Image (tube, rainbow, N blue to C red; front, side, top):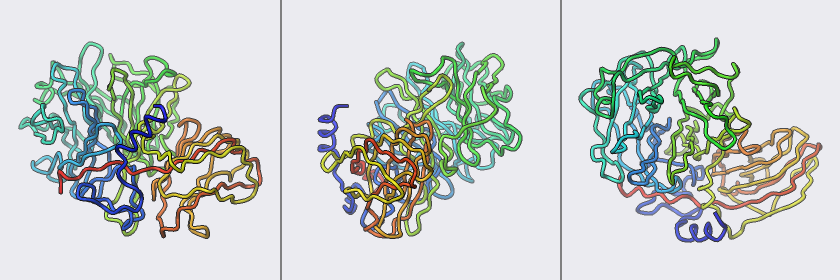
Length: 467
């Protein structure tokens, strides 16, 4: 998007600056809670949140939905967006109203079916790892899909597993779901199902085997995800199988839909993020504008002392194939509309030795892009710095050529080499002075050929529907 379009969007939509107290519709108060992020999603009322569940794009109403585990016992919170940047808070979507969800509504997914009505189905697991059940919109014509119904036929199947995936189809139209077990991901199929009525009717789902068995030493495969890899640099017919246990781990490989078995290219898994506290992630297929892309959300396990809220959602990340069988995760381009062009800075050709070089730029919420040459182990950025002993260092991996860093008060997401690797870090902001930024070196080669910096505006947040 061209710079002038971004600037116009910001002028029209960015109504908050850091330090502005909450309003009637937006209850966030960045003065009262210095750890409160501005562009990572937080639900209101402020409370516990964890796994992202059922993110989806609704092509009927051209809106994005995010569900997530919320409060205790766990419910499914719900928010909606026109652009994956600004959010409207909605009432709780799924509560504890039935025998199978009395202990809490645990993780699952959302699917928009390829039928005439483009039906929406949420697939959900119970707290005892025994029941998989579904929810559907009460009124498909409601653009917010605000009310949800749990059919009387629930649960759709019983198992010793949890965290069902999206509903996906074989080339001949058979509906399937994978879920997580202590042994890996298992696969279920809806026998003779022809549409949404059959899917939610239940008693038609049959286990057909293990989609992928875990490697010895791995724990319970929580929050599995399974999808074809997209992107201009992805090989055709490559699939991604992901599970959560001590972080989020993924494989790429081939999927034989006749046998229902996924075969990884490599027995060694890789991680979405170097931090194990990036967890329970979930992707969805975004088909807006007829161009398909895969978007990733992850639970950031952070519990800042003194804050009402606990746990964050990551920024939405674009998942793309690279080098044929590998993948990258990188912030969606829509987030760039929150960059403040006024006060932006660009620095060139900086060489840092064994020193801390303070930059003429300050902020609690900002975005950095840098082209670098790094031969040492201590090159990087010092952020949220009080000028003395209170700071967070973001170290750049040796051999990296470019860096993207999003600093949002108490959480920092850094992406190396276009998202080949990423690292999430957390920091408790001690005072309003924790705003300085510096470059740091270790005496080896630390060259910053280009450093671009923008302050970030918080996203627009409308919580009036729950106030």
